[in-house]
Length: 101
Image 1 (cartoon, one colour):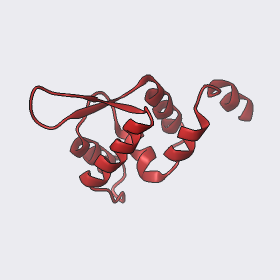
Image 2 (cartoon, helix red, strand yellow):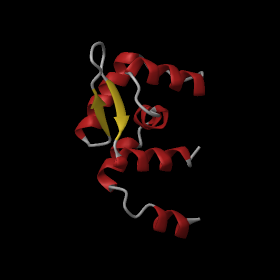
Image 3 (tube, one colour):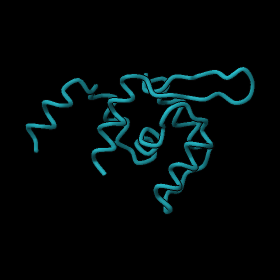
Image 4 (spheres, one colour):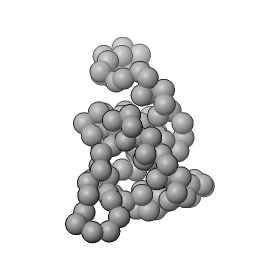
């Protein structure tokens, strides 16, 4: 319904939305729930879509771009690899993309 989508998602940043419409970027945003490491995101993507071809390095590259666009933020553990979580804007995009399945 065009009226519903226009009224519900007026606050989406169109320039960021355009960047997120690539399949791997959207998959990372959909997969990120809570705080996760890139390898966990990759496993979640592969579990939801067995045909998905993405490596942890690809996820790290995507996460770096998402950080620059303000979609995710790092959550630094005391030691080990960093984890990431969605920002409020990122959560909005995740809700939008999960509704498109």
